[in-house]
Structure formats: C-alpha cells, structure tokens
Image (cartoon, rainbow, N blue to C red; front, side, top):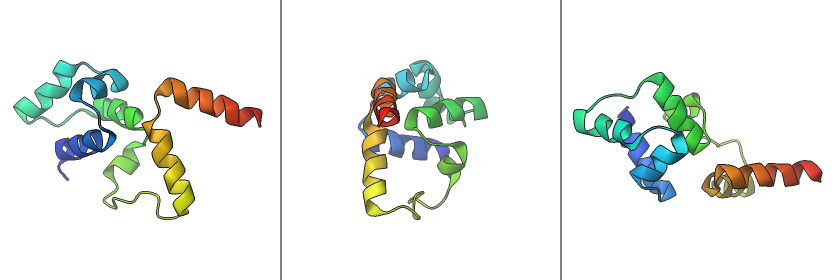
Amino acid sequence: MDILNKITEMRLEKGWTEYELAERSELTQSTISSWYRKKLIPSISSLEHICNAFGISLSQFFNENTDNSNSLTEEQKEILKRWNKLTKEQQSKLADFLDSL
C-alpha cells in the first residue's frame, strides 16, 4: 500500500488542500509536505492524527477494500459521506442535536 498516495487521494476526495489537512489533523504543514519531499512514511501517531481528520480509524485506513462500509445501506453511506464533509464543530453540533431527539 502506498500510504502517501492514499492520504493524497483521501485529501483530494474531500477537496482539502495540504494546509487544510494539516489544520484538521493538528499537524504542521511542513511535517506533511516533508513526507512527500523526502518520501517518508508517517509515524503511527501522525497517521492517527490524519485518520482523525478524515473521521476514520487506522484499520479503516489500511482496509484494502475501498468501500469500507459494504454492510451499510445506500442511505447510510450517503449520511456518512455528508458527515465526513462537516467540520469538527459542525459534527459536534449535529451529534448534540441527534442526542436531543
């Protein structure tokens, strides 16, 4: 598995710049760009930050099946796609709203 390529694909799928990924993952942009310049593999700790930014677990990241949610209905998949496009603050507010129902 090409980890850097997968990170890039996931970032582009969300429409994020490298800077936005850095902000959302709480890593510095220089750290992320150095991975690409030096062809380094991120540490597990850094990968956890990246996965948190994408709203996935490490196991989901390493899952070779590109459709990690094959047991979900199409409606559930659509909801997850929308959830992943929200900011952390928006996700928190939505979760609070759902809890209030």
